[in-house]
Image (tube, rainbow, N blue to C red; front, side, top):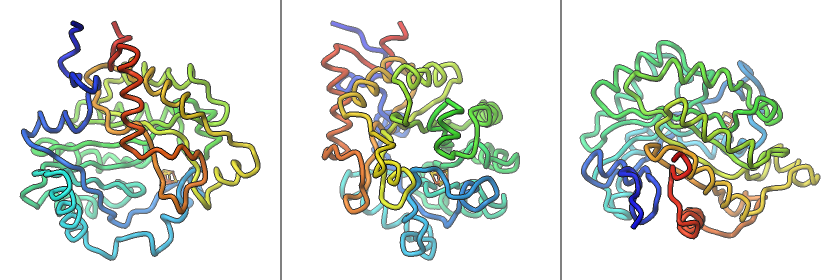
Length: 312
Ligand code: SF4
């Protein structure tokens, strides 16, 4: 019988984030999203305008945001949902929408502390961009991380500067490296967001990011396919035939390759992206999130493989 690395779940053959949290906190832990009313420097003109070409414009319309609802109310509703649906006992509050370090340190501190004040909250997860991390924000998060769990989610999407420019990402790979360098060793988990399927991207080019994740000591990853939703420039490109999504089989194979190439110690938070049917443009794979998650895991199983296998 094959001996899997200790961090790899024996059945699903990866180091899933849910499993990691269960071991770390001794119970089921769920992430609860809150919208604290942030914006994004790649939309407001300070870094760029228009945003990334796949950025969901509808989420910037007033009706789609919830900052008028206090984060405490959002937290209670989310925790209630996860308690009933999954039996979760503890929670990580996920500042998810837009760029969640893009404000004064005083406002950030107040928001993060409000989230941490609930007795069932074990920590926070903060989604941001590499170019939106002030020294003050890093000091604040490092201070919180001395006592509580903190995960900093850094959007990178691609390590290819040509792709970053084409998607109007508004930052370079070098800026991502600089951000990782400044945050490493400060007690926070670092989660990197990646996308596969950009126009002109090869599987071999994408897989270089697995080595990058290993060499930088990144703790966690989120991966999804490039997908277009209504109202985005990517949807326009798709409608003009200038964006052809990768085939589902190609995505599954590339995701399995990626998992084989990253260290077994890296936790895996996501393997697929989805959009509500009413705004989805392409691709139309018609698989639910968990079916796609298991399609990748089944590919690993069919190969007789597991996360980190190709690292030797
Ligand atoms: S960084 Fe995120 S919020 Fe900002 S434009 Fe890109 S996708 Fe949209």
